[in-house]
Image (cartoon, rainbow, N blue to C red; front, side):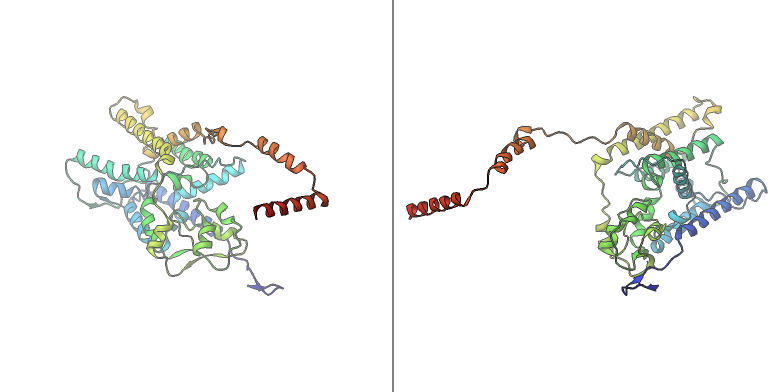
Length: 390
């Protein structure tokens, strides 16, 4: 810290967290590339997929895989670090950051359409509960847990090259352009609802280390669109359950007032009061409708593919998860139904128009200022009226 002329402490230069996070993302993708190469090229098949879908595999058939262990480790870490895994170690979060960077380089600014509802809770219910019950019904019995760290293979749920283009192009690039940065995390990811419970009790958060000047640069930089500045000013920390600890608010703060620190956590009742978990159904109606139609389309195509109604040459390129179709319908419905304009007043007669106000006010403004004689006459008239009343 350096001392300024007025005696106040000026912020010292700090290393941006964004560079460190970029290094983590590059290391993550390098590790995934080595893992895939070791499986398909060198035949080292002791470790299977590391996808979070391992949670759904365990619920449906009882498979204990590396992906399940990764999900469990992530959920345990949320009680201390919050959603730091989403901001630092999620491969699809890194893909969305790259999509935003590429869109900016191409000059395509995100449309940032506002949708207050979330589909991720519905997708979690569909993928974890409904799909599990249907699988149990098809098996005819409850599955027993078994350990196989080498299953399934790393690219089991990826499909063909066209499937990858459709999934990544839609879920990363297109919805980033339509709904803004980290749109998949904010609106679609079915695993974030599981991390919100641990984030309520997290001790490491973005906190104020010096007074806030209210520039709201942190609000504009937050990829999850959290009310960072208002929570920092009111509570001294970011208590939003969707905070992914990416550190962008810290990097853009002009005074260096934001730090990632560990202190006594906020009481649970206060955190629940700040993060109201209820969403207004009328505002989220279009979003829920789009997600439901997308899931129904996925089920219809899956049934048609299993019944050989769709040729194998076409069916093998279809995406393998509900998120693609749900996202497609959400984007179509959002683009086809822009925000409605405010309705005109239904009772214009009860409101006085601005022209009428001008007509009434003009004679008053144009009336001459009374002279002293007029003032004396008015004073005499006031005296006479007082004598008459007496």
